[in-house]
Length: 112
Image (cartoon, rainbow, N blue to C red):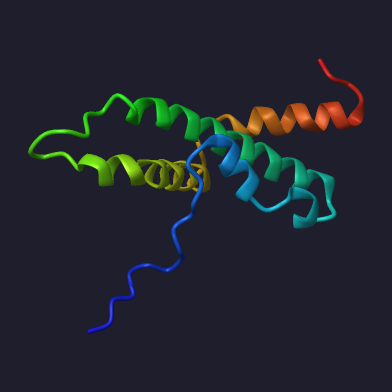
């Protein structure tokens, strides 16, 4: 019996800096400055969500009869990173658009 549920390997990022380092370079994503700015804004939102979710998950207990123990503690960073990616791909929490708008203003030389 083949199990084909996993379509891509788990990402090794467990911290915001690692998440940012693993993302594709927006400069190579497209030549259009607007497309690059949106990619950078989405990356910023993903790193923000990763940080926020990491803080939330750090308060959960990992010890006891119904908790994951060391395994849960070890793989929690992977889970948090995937949550951040999924939320960002689904439209995020509303951070990317204002960041995108500000990036465009800065590029045009009219930062407010």
